[in-house]
Length: 104
Figure 1 (tube, rainbow, N blue to C red):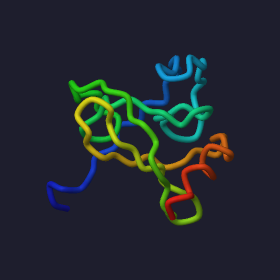
Figure 2 (figure 1 turned 180 degrees about the vertical axis):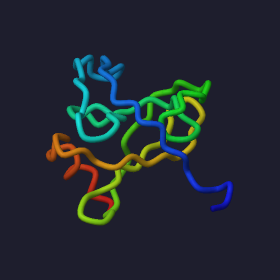
Figure 3 (figure 1 turned 120 degrees about the horizontal axis):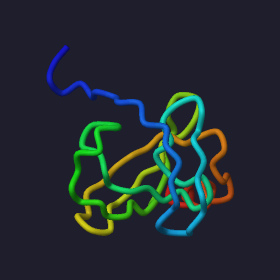
Figure 4 (figure 1 turned 45 degrees about the vertical axis):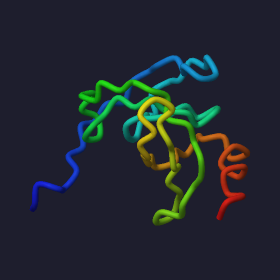
């Protein structure tokens, strides 16, 4: 495998969403990486789960794309403006995901 293969560090942690203030519980089946209420995330990883990114900007959801039998949420960081993607979780607010599909 080449160096460009993403390495995944499992980090299923509770956190308080910095966008909406919701207390977010662990996901339980994979790493929790965004708020299931407002879908916002935080730019903390370089490789998934490593917590090595110094940016720490909020990742604003801007769209979705189909991924296998689910979706990936597309983000843009409000600090460094880099794009990012996270796989949707089973308990995500589907109304918010639907709102993001208007650009499909």
